[in-house]
Image (tube, rainbow, N blue to C red; front, side, top):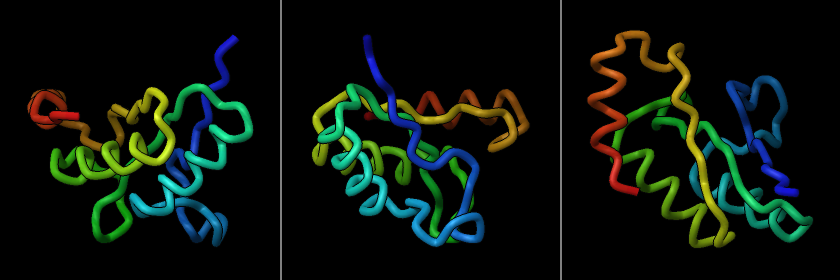
Length: 98
C-alpha cells in the first residue's frame, strides 16, 4: 500500500496558520510526512503572492526542494481552477522540467 500525503490543497494560511505555502514549508512538511510513513507527496505550489500557480520556475523550484527533502515521488496539482485556459495550462505544464 502507498500512502500519499496531500500537503496543502487549495488552502491558505487564512484557513490555518500552519498551512505550508512556501517551498521551504512544503519541504519541511513533506519530510515529516515521509518520516511518518508517506511514500509520495502531492502539493499545490504557490507564487510570491500565495496563489496557486503553474509557473515553470516556481513549480520546478518547489518540486526540487521537496524532492531533496524527502526523496519520494512528488506530484503537483494540475487543477483547471489554477489556469482555466486549457491551451495556456498545457503550455505551462509542458514547460516544467522537474
